[in-house]
Length: 374
Ligand SMILES: NC(=O)c1ccc[n+]([C@@H]2O[C@H](COP(=O)([O-])OP(=O)(O)OC[C@H]3O[C@@H](n4cnc5c(N)ncnc54)[C@H](O)[C@@H]3O)[C@@H](O)[C@H]2O)c1
Ligand SMILES: CC(C)[C@H](N)C(=O)O
Image (cartoon, rainbow, N blue to C red):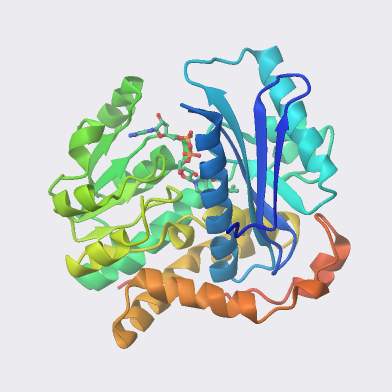
């Protein structure tokens, strides 16, 4: 059975590439989620990705306490296809046409393979887009905020493991040195963490050297003998096989959809490895974008909301421990409670809509003060 409210699949008018927009849920509000422009063996693999990623966005917004639904867009590039500037623009205009046809039910932002500059191109056709460059009125690159949010999640886990939220001297293995991964690795290095890193792009070894990190191949890194493994690349890195190989005490990172199948969360729990659901640890980017672009709060307030991920993770780990659950079960129950507490009929607004600001500005679940270290 299809869990999603709607899935649009179009052959792009200009590019002829498959443009997929999956709207999983608008129960909490108009749907949002990034645009992934990535290579897939078959476009149907891109569809599978869009379905899973959009469902994760529903949980991400629900746990973050934001009045937004879950969606995602994917353009499935055939393996080996490179886009020159003109062709890339054609693809983005094709995506914009599909989004415009949905009349505000879904708004897009950056994800793997796309950037604020791409959002600017989409914004030429439709207002249903976020994270455009700041000089065009958007909130800009989401990745530094995603990295800060992942750092906040890591602090909560560090406190569980070591009694302090400081990551100085802790060993972490970062998988993927893309926009979020490299930002997070830099924050960790600045705090004195001992880093092991990898990427499929061997040019990233320069960044590894610059950070004083140990470079491992993508195949080896999951079994690295570190405190925490930090997935920051693509999904499905945690399988029953890789879960058995892990030597860390926790897996916490910004990559979306880390589990190949949901039961891997149970395998990690049985091995006494803390896994923070990706949709919790990766929420910093959207928390910042929604706070800045829809709620119009100050940059300081948006940052405080991102840092509050530390409290959310603390609460989830407490609940999981108290109830004898995995953190995944605790997070999914929280999301389910928030989703069932709303009536879809109430959400007639689209994105961006002034009435959304008026009705939801006060609904953030953010503590005014952060607890200090440890
Ligand atoms: N950009 C954001 O604000 C944001 C927000 C939330 C979640 N995320 C998620 O974080 C992850 C990274 O996003 P990004 O924006 O940094 O993307 P990106 O495209 O900038 O970086 C991805 C990096 O992962 C590397 N990579 C791909 N496959 C790999 C593999 N098998 N092993 C090692 N490295 C591999 C790529 O070479 C690239 O350097 C994605 O899962 C994304 O969905 C991103
Ligand atoms: C910016 C945002 C939409 C991000 N790609 C996410 O998955 O949360």
